[in-house]
Amino acid sequence: MWWRQIIIKYAPKVVYRKKDGFSVLSENWDHLIILDACRFDVFSEEIKKSVLYKKGKLEYRISNGSMTLEFLSENFGEGVFNEIVYITANPFVDMLLKNKFYKIISVWKDGWDNNLNTVHPRTVYEYTKLSIKKYSDKRFIIHFMQPHFPYLTLKLAEETGFAKHREAVLQGAMKWKDKTVWDLVEEGRIPLEVVVQAYRKNLEIALKYVEKLVKILDGKIVITSDHGEAFGEKFHPMIPIKVYGHPKNVRIDALVKVPWFVINKPKKKIVNDEKQKLSIAISKFLQKNLSLVKPPQT
Image (cartoon, rainbow, N blue to C red):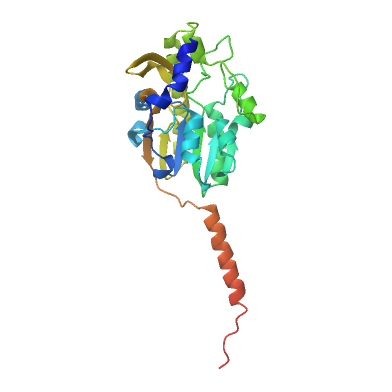
């Protein structure tokens, strides 16, 4: 319904005037694993089935964004982060945060699966496994696409993937139009229950590769999300409009309450590249100049 979309687009500026989200960079972590569009309630159920559950502590945070672009700009829009390598299956990271990190490893470019119309979590794991050896002195942000659609176990006749988003970023475009699985739900072309089940399965599959990652990472590891996913919750107690997906600026629990699962392992030394370069330069300067100073004659 067009009027519902108009309300969801413009009403948040009036209804949700204050953001109460946290800053990712203000938290203590060595490696941050992001599960895209992961609801806290679904995560809290699925993590209990994982071998990770007894190794960590489950908390939650309130995200600064209800969609990825909002989350990225709010958390990393200012500053440069030379101690962080960002591995991403989501094209938005490259679009918005170019030159912000020591390195962005764009799995979505070369690790894209045309059959799945997304990046399989296995591919993110493989890229990370190689990268942590190459950049062993860095902190990592590892951004999986799942549980965000497309769903690995649900085949749809109509394309509702991330291909147009990917193509737009490759071409340097900032806007695109793409049908989502939530459009099909709202149109009554696919049952909500089917989509929710596929969403859960996406998370289950992703967690299997997160388990593998935790084995090879060290230090303080946090599993979180950029935002949640709405399954038809009310837009506001006073505005009984249902919300699906993750529209911008909508501050409901389904969208901004995200997992914060902490696993503590022995910590490694993190090197800030700029500080390291400065230290080396000063050391070389002192060595060179001190060698020119002759000791006094006695």
